[in-house]
Figure (spheres, rainbow, N blue to C red):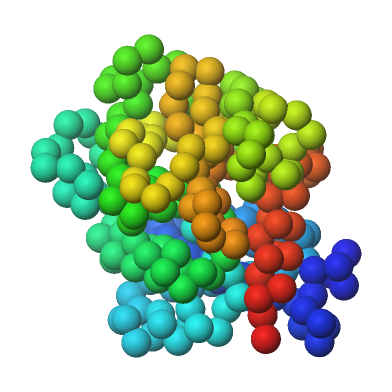
Length: 251
């Protein structure tokens, strides 16, 4: 599989994956949930973890050396980055992570670096480009269905369908117009950022997919394909798309 996704010189593309911090006993851990890196490897790429606390000069060097990016799920983005007032309870705020991921996303859009943005990453993508969020979908969005299927549900639990826009880049990875997806979030895209397009919606109308149409691969999805790629070939195809485009652009 790896030879299908390597550059002409045989080098597998490096995919920078941003991280989060978690307190485990006395340990302050910076990392990422393993299925993200496993999905990148299964798609033929090599994951490279991007730690927090990097200054601009340092993350810029990392950015220049990787061939693509993955923005994973995690805690909420602080409200002041897209709204004038706090309207709901937020979870897991990390200012350093917000600052790093927003800067990386804006740079990736400007410089045409391929990236896949998942759940929180999907929301980061929208905020980075000037959009807003529902601070809590269930309490704020009219007619919203349940979207926060956490424990005791398994992470690959099928929560609902999304309708895929047929002319979108993401449509290349599904044989039909709809996809059965999981759902592990309480926030979501509210006002779409200028320059982005909606590529998928859930049955209640929530924006579940976005992309930058003039970018080689700038795709955001609200669900978690890394938790489903072993069950659904189309979910792995998203990661393969990222790896393939990143390989084609690598030197």
